[in-house]
Amino acid sequence: MGIFKALSKIRGGYPGGWKEYARGYQGNKTPQFVQPTSTDDRRSLIPPKGLREYWYPALPAKAIGKKKPVGLKLLGEDVTLFRDTNGEVQALWDYCPHRGVYLSWGDCFWKGYLSCPYHGATFNGDGECVEFITEGPDSKMVGQLKAKKFPTVTLKGLVFIWMGENEPVPPEDDIPPEFFEKDSVVLNTFRYWDCNWMIALENTGDAHNQWFVHRNSFRVARSGRSSRTPVGSRPRIVNNQTVERPNGRERQPYYADESGKVPYKFYHPRVNAYWPMYRRRLLWTWFFDAWNRLRPKRGRFFNVPGWEGQRLPGLVRNNHLTHMYTRWPVPVDENLSRVVYFFSARPSNWLGRLYDRVTFNLFLNWMINYNFSDQDYDAMRSARYQYPEYLSSTDWWRSGVSCRNTGAASNTTLRWWRRPQRSDWWPQQNSLLL
Picture 1 (tube, rainbow, N blue to C red):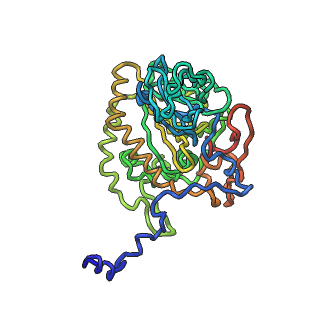
Picture 2 (cartoon, rainbow, N blue to C red):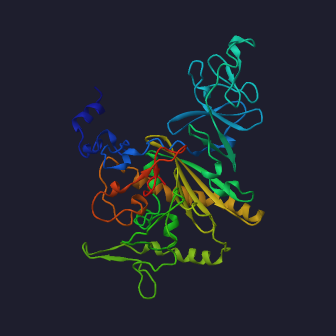
């Protein structure tokens, strides 16, 4: 036994040896997702791998070349994507109907066709077997094999996949309107969150955390504003598909004085202390106040009704006035979400389009989607659904319009109905799925 190993054994775990497994093997990892089992908790009805009968963003079209397919998992389903003879992106179930191997491990030897890596079953964009390499041109497998196909559409350089079993609805039903506009700018970025899609989705429009979770974010700290209230907004249901909160910018803030000014620091009498504890975050707001006065003014980003707020199957849409922020958590499996962000703008000329692309890539993408939103992820990823929740009136995204601040577990207020050829469960009063 070496001297260092012997000394290590003598030393044992002192000091601080208790820290290594203080939280068991879990450590700081995200806890496993567990749904409630109580019949009184309607969250047990929500599909943990997502709602199937919808269009979902998959990946950037530029990621799919001509020689190799790309494998991707959505809603617990393995798919493979490749380009057909017209150069369009197609999606098949990542399962060869001959022996069940991954088609995504194969090759596109011939332009527009995907060949299985095991026996060379070769499929076109419709999933039809057109050749069977190991048996030659006279193979009887040709015309007999068919791989399952998922409909796709490519918009603004992003591939969307219909994940349902029924005939797809028009893409316009599920994909934001700006994707269909010729002159709009829609940019995207992708993140992975180690949590269920429902947990990722419900974190939005939270009156609690703007000046708490995000107090050190660049976006909040530059303004010095404080948004706190014990009174929640009252949302509304739009077209049975969107939970939308009323625009509160014109309302008098809850803690405003007679002049309409909200104090920066609040006194909390039961702990005899102030929050924020310090005023140092105000030291640099003067620069941004000047910048906001000088930068070009734009009109408010316009949305038709039903395209702001939380929308099925999982969009979060916040109007940032000059542009539209969209966060779309796409289920990968029960414990992993692929979070797709959209930056949408409607510049009036080529110079505005260039400005949006440059500022997004140099700064806005980091500020909004990484610095700001990653703070949401760090704060909420340990949320556990298997235990009761006691909601506040400001938890309006979670509890829906029927929530009452009774101090009881308000998740029992959820109500659902079925709709043909869409998801099995359709929310009426709860924003959890919207």
